[in-house]
Amino acid sequence: MRSKEDVTLAASLRHAPVRTGLVAVVPVVLAVVQLLNGIFTELPILVGFAFAATMVTAAVVFTRHHLAQLRLEVLETQDHARPAD
Image (cartoon, rainbow, N blue to C red):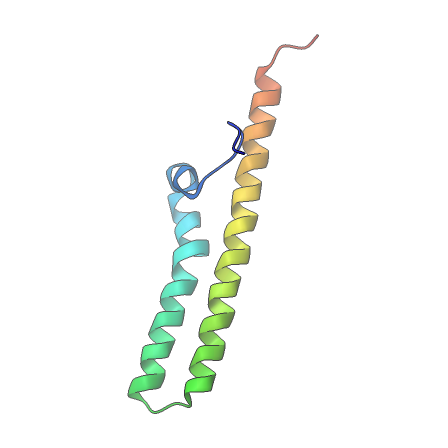
């Protein structure tokens, strides 16, 4: 169940577009380019798939970490905005 503290990829793109692009998009693009490079240069396909799998996994891990950092910032901002009892 979602709460208003949850941070989505779209919110991350609005908050930090460059960093989100670097952690979410660039590794996937590199994976696709390496697969195409392997096809056109007759590189063993296993090497290309291994690299692509590693880059996609890295993109997932980096993106989840980035979203967690952004969620922490949101929670800290809400906590500081709330008046003390």
